[in-house]
Amino acid sequence: MTVAYIGLGANLGDARQAIKDAIVCLAQQIGVTIIGKSDLYRTAPIESSGDDYLNCAVAVETSLSARQLLALCLKIELHFGRERPYKNAPRTLDLDLLVYGDERITEPDLIVPHPRLALRAFVLHPLADIAPELDIPGVGRVSALLPDVADQRIERVAQGCCPTKRVCTS
Image 1: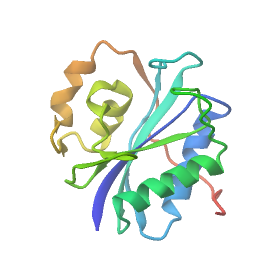
Image 2 (image 1 turned 135 degrees about the horizontal axis):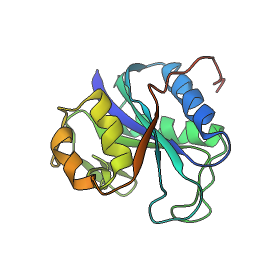
Image 3 (image 1 turned 180 degrees about the horizontal axis):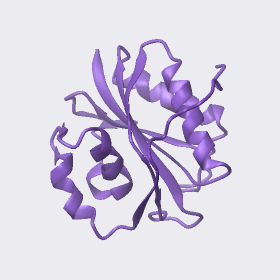
Image 4 (image 1 turned 30 degrees about the vertical axis):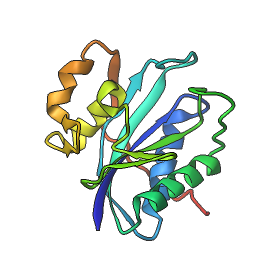
């Protein structure tokens, strides 16, 4: 089993519910066990316009490969109506595979660790909630990276991003 970290975000529709429901979907998948959930944060969009985002992260223990876990994340995004009309478009749901064990993967459609995670408060703060001492391969310790994003606006809006019901049928 491998421990992986997934970032979740949304800024269209009922973003809070979409994130909660996506966590339920992840938890219902064979080969995926949620082992940690961050608090929920509000952040301004980066390199795009639109409403603020809600963001969190989950830690999962998985028997899936990195590619299989990414495919699952993309499937869940589609289940919740994710469209990609242009780069950095507002979204109903976004799931990013941030870290997959201690692996470093560079392929055309899969880069792990996520290439911009060290630059984003909306990734680092949720990761710090669940794994502050995580040493991200080739990047550094989560807690040591936080000062580098101190100038980015981020607000904790809820403790935990805990799901409350079954919603995923696919």
